[in-house]
Image (cartoon, rainbow, N blue to C red; front, top):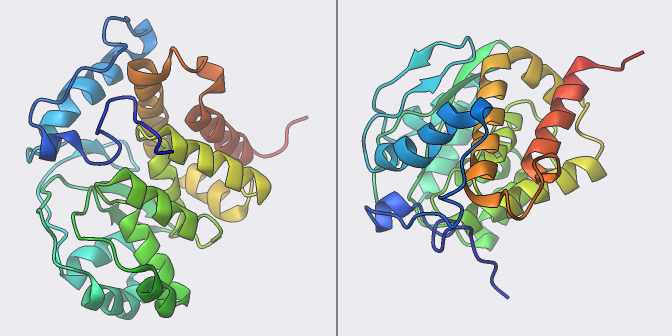
Length: 261
């Protein structure tokens, strides 16, 4: 049975593309807690407007607010911003097989630091999904890159499928693509991440521990986004301490802090 999103249609497609005036969430009448009023307002009111094509300010790993336009199309140099420079040839191979995008998204991506290298994660992509057998034939690094790219897809079901591909990897450059999903609104993906990382004992792995330690401002921003989506859409379904994204983020933070006592 198909799972429904908290706002009908939001999970399957970004509402700003299909519907310039997305429906109000069912919990609209509930007031957020004072500690999350600002970020709640940002995500619920500002983000849909920004997704329609306006610039969306984001915080870099140093905490600075940045802005500008990028276009992730069929261009290896654009896509390469989201990955270490050493992977450029693999990125070229992936770009060569990507379908043409149906829509160009101009919001700038999120800046993070991985192993001392600044990366810019794609905001959203609108390329049609690749057939499963094509992705499987890529194998190795190219398959992981493809999974990371499609984890930024506008369709939530495509993001979930891509997430399955990348969750088993301990590559440091894969980690931000997983963490980014915890700050978004699809609770099924957040629950998947929580389950898989728990089963694989990945929360305190070197890759995740180093990423959280190197990106404190980004990590806190992701956590505030998760709180906002819980407050907007899920507070009737979950207690805050039971919300999968927040459990996962808390465990990542604990892992980065190391053993206590």
